[in-house]
Image (tube, rainbow, N blue to C red):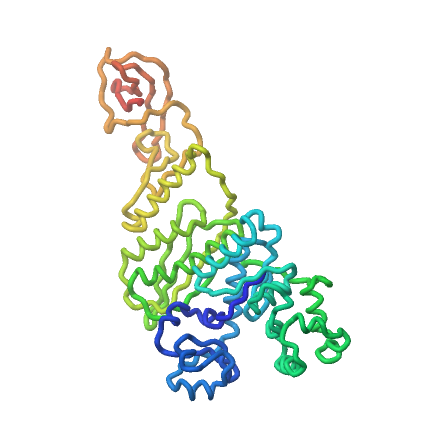
Length: 452
């Protein structure tokens, strides 16, 4: 399967495709004084891909020229390949504007070729890319079908092969306009006039000879930047742009079968230092909707001092994340994650210093065996004896005859290092219809807690 991006130079400049399409000002991407890509406003004035720059300016004097950025195109193509690795591990680059995927082993998982192509197309659209997709029996055949937009190799226009201009002109003079007509020519004549490379590509497209490819390896960490089409100071505009990078992050993590506990969002401004926003989570995951909710809370609670011109998301510390099948009647793990995510949203909105949970603390004195923390943590070791759910503060003195001992004693002697040392013998006792946790000291008996 092949993905070809006819408008990749625009995306490589990290500009919003929809923003350019909606603009009334004509623009064009050029290289070597020739138009590569232009928008609808320029095409309405007679400018088309392949037009000479001088002719384009004559037709549209107000034409805006965007130079082609080869290095940025390469980075954009690699970002697409990293995202596509979630569908198959066999992804290869075909510069300057194509990505090839070996999907035979993934078809059953994604419900067939049609569903997989629909998912690829929709996912790339969410990322802001417009792709031409095609499937073929070989990598070269899929690539040519994507470039030519055809359904069969024989009917493909000869331009889909991306030959040199001199070769295309020669084929046109001898009346060859499709790949089928080219394949009917004598092989010796093709080799003599166009070289062995064209025959080799034909054999690879038809499956007559193998085509070894180098598969793309996703990077160890995620680091992507997006230049905004216009400076943004409103939280919703920044969030809308950040979603594209979060989608790339989600695909990148799915490809690595990993999750992260958080990421850093950097907002670049013209005259001030970048704004740094840390988004964290109690557990590693790759749920983009949760990340987006946290980011919305943080952006809504702050005011930007200067409009943002570019955004950048960095995420490191990948943690292997196995896929968990949901239980028929839910699970305690999913309920715990729901509470954790609610806490994270409250912290993102109100601040980490405001929202706290309760966590256990390594201390034998019951009144000091807990602490306020950003999130609750499980006790590493079981307590040496039963502990009540409710503690009284301060403990209440008991009189003789108010209780009946059931179990104990448990000696707790601690605190000599901080001046609040205690020596207590704890018992479980019946007190009316309740179970009580009481202790004895030299001063007498005290009620310290009640069991549920």
